[in-house]
Image (cartoon, rainbow, N blue to C red; front, top):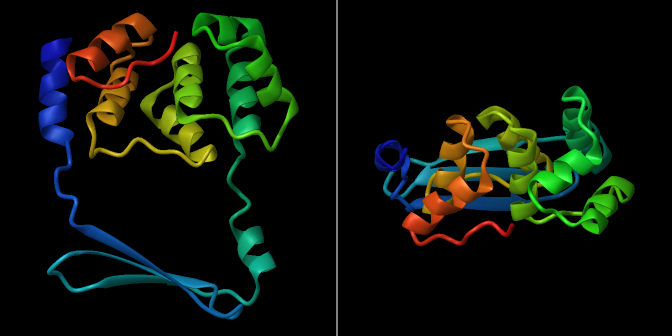
Length: 174
């Protein structure tokens, strides 16, 4: 497992941090344009224009919020809430807050722990993290190791923490 992780990190760690992102905010007719390019290369520009902020929000409302997505995943697996939060030692009160408050924004670690509890696939954890405005970038060991664990179905938190420890990463609280 550790040798596989070492190979995975070697193949996937993005050391190039020279990417630049620029955001320009304009009038209500031109909501924004964003540019993403590598230093020294020609700029690539993505531009989205809408007539109003309400139209822009409506166009992008297709994405599920975290709470909806989480409880859909729990229901699909026919699990009880207590099965989910007990498996990864998430406090019952915190889980209750997630269930009852649609506007509650959990930490990235909480989302990852819930993903391990639900034994999600790589795609599912990426989508769940995205629904909470988080990601698993490939430019640091912690996120690569977490991604590796979901790819390889390593859901035991002690095993995950052992891999994180080997790379001097912050451990998941259990």
